Length: 340
Ligand SMILES: Cc1c2[nH]c(c1CCC(=O)O)Cc1[nH]c(c(CCC(=O)O)c1C)Cc1[nH]c(c(CCC(=O)O)c1C)Cc1[nH]c(c(C)c1CCC(=O)O)C2
Image (cartoon, rainbow, N blue to C red; front, side, top):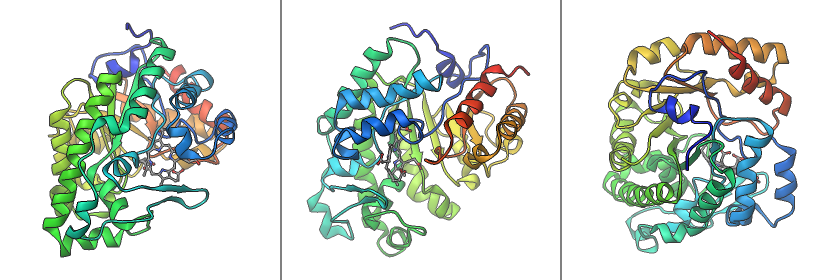
């Protein structure tokens, strides 16, 4: 299928584009009233994720309503632990909760390296979305980085410090590596299946990168991200490691095309540290709480700093749920209207 708008893919490959492409992390399902309507029509978040027709509908909403240059498949990073045998529930105001968690080697017998068929519903949603998009924009597949998934499996829920996950790295490093390796194998199979189903690029989210020391990050996270990047040779790969400013030199060596920046990472400094990479980001999502004039000014400042090539405009982390839709549109329209 020939893409009608290939700006995002061309930019990811480092090719020149008529303008900078734009999409937003967490664009599907956070701010649109149209999403809430679909969400209210079904039992809960997981039922929506597991319903390919509805997942397709909410994946395409931001393309129709916001005019972004890429779609990201509606799912969650936590489908991997679930497929491995560790069920989660999405609690209405608390976020994800795992009724059972993993604490040590004795718990490994209750989980397994997951096979892509265990996530058939995601693959079906990707296939259907590709059909419905009909080449309008590329589709992004995704997975969590092994370290971030490990953190949820050990903690059993979100945490401010993830100290139980970090404790495991100090107290049971061998067990940590065994679990990280199982997650990595599951993730490689899963991402390869997403590509086969139609994903045009895959992004790895390391949301909890920033809580590790540089040495630990290298040993317990980057090593596994690197294995994933080496394995995915079919499509471009984006690595977004929130808070990993200290690892930018090493990230320049990964076999990925794009590195996502958060808003703490200076743009000029990141260019100098990662000359091999296309950069994605990095407006502070809170900038969208300003006035329309503020959003326009901050977005323009960001575009000036990145320059016209090797950049995919995005936020520095996911869109916050209470952001006003017209501010989101203003961000997107400012990128589209921009000329250097
Ligand atoms: C850490 C993480 C999770 N999930 C994800 C991450 C990594 C990105 C990041 O750091 O923000 C990734 C994710 N989650 C979701 C997507 C869909 C695609 C997109 O729009 O980007 C993506 C890419 C849907 C979702 N995932 C979730 C929702 C909200 C659930 C609802 O509609 O009730 C959506 C639309 C729930 C979720 N899922 C997770 C949490 C902590 C929560 C609860 C709080 C929250 O909303 O973020 C785990």
